[in-house]
Length: 210
Image (tube, rainbow, N blue to C red; front, side):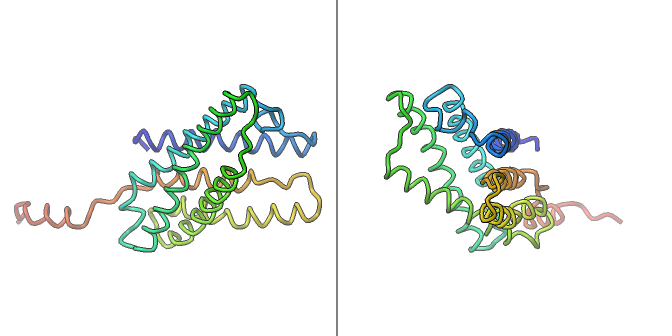
């Protein structure tokens, strides 16, 4: 946890979860979203939310990069999933920043259809990639916390669908978003294992003890 990128990712996860869950509660109780949403146009909370999302996504991508060897574990499948997930996060980080800048410059929330479609695909890749990565890490003891958290996205989505089908005002993507955020951040908390080659080399060079 001493790594700055892990601390940044945990802070980003906490911030994103606070924004999302507060919106879920506010909407359920009042029928309105918080000022972080685009319902209220360009305002300080909207801009701040965009900045927080950008920095958080960048931190999550940083965790995946810094722990890439440990996450992959020699698996080509996990390597491919991690790379796709990292790409989606980086696109969202840049996209949210550009979206905020353009909105502030024009004074209106940018609603470009092409950007919205591409961002939607990136969000889908982030969710599917997170779930897939979590399920693939279930047998890894060092990644157990991250794996269980990411795998929990599926039941969270199921719960949201059920709530939406019953007309409950508590149906909200915030629950899945919080699990995605903390699941990716928790990867940085996994204990780092010393490479086998390095351990064997040290054992060979060390003098024998009688």
